[in-house]
Image (cartoon, rainbow, N blue to C red; front, side, top):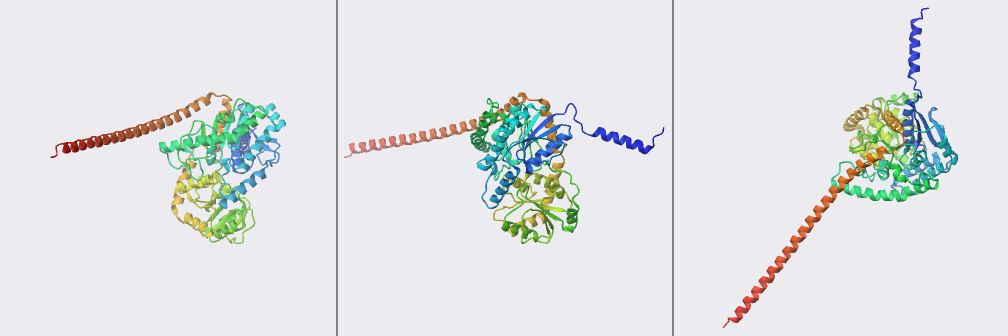
Length: 544
């Protein structure tokens, strides 16, 4: 029987499609993810990493609170625990923090001097450990987890790593969270990282600068361990989880560190072998926009569109501030796409469209987009770089100041302060970036760097997590990594000690020379005085 040619082609196509579907083979790993927060950019980062792991044929389980609405892919598993720290709690915290900073109060959320931030993280972890049903389910689950992925903001992931005896992968979703990395582990050269997001390190340091930063970091490390990690150590001991190992040690034993940074924005810096840069993990080729958004974009003509987005939390603001912003946008010749959920400003122009949420990556990738007005969140900055859209950065809190500084340093846009912002300042900043070609030229170059990686960031992260999962739970790599760190620090401190010794010797030599000179002068003056006295006596003796 002769099969028609079209049917044979369809049959072959069906077989190829079936074979190409990812399946959970015997090599599939069971991976546990504990987000630092269940909302915003931190949660988005974890979802993207989890999706990449699913695509490689692994099982992925998220640890989430009861109130979290499950908007995850159906292929994810979810383990839930009872907690009072809800998604809305985090949204309110970050929104209030952004408003306070816009008024010039300058509160640093990640310093942990902020008692509310510390309390939210601690209470969330405590809720997990005291939920005996949840903890027993993790321990006795037929799913033998291979690795746990945690956010550096939350020291609870290292505790669960000890409890389950599985390897730990730590994620630094923002550039400023590197501060917590060097405060809690030995996997980075701390002297190259900023200790203050408002004064970032933007160039290689001289040896005395290395020494000063290392000293500051040593003091900050001791403070961090005493003010923060001690509380989690007590919490771990309360529930009898490996009291022989401190949280500091557990964090330092992380097998892999994923940093949301890339050389298209960051300056070069040394890193340890278990550090992987996955900056731009949310940036990708754009999808088609909804019809109403696409129509708005196309109606902008040759002038194009200015996109305004202040992140997941700060999409509402005081009436006075929103009126200032709307007034500046209304003066532009371009159309304005503004992600804003508050009350429409009274000064809103006809060229401005307000939407509660936008597909940010897809809009930035539209050929009509000419400018991005942003709070300088790291994901948004990398998406703008990826799609070569210059920026006007208005940072409010956290790593946003550091990110805005990088944007300015690279000539990818300009930065203005939220506090004291006027309509003229905002309008002039947008006109400068729109009309000065240097920003567009430089960001196109940086876009090529970001796109030129041999593997997309999500797949790169998944590859190395898979590698750690297959290695298993052992400490073979730990000593080697620490030896590298110790050798570096030893050489640095030896050089510093050598310089100090030279300075001390030189100082002593100068002091000795000064004393000897003084003695010579003193002796010379005495001898001269004696000669004068003898001469005077002789003159008296032989006088007539």
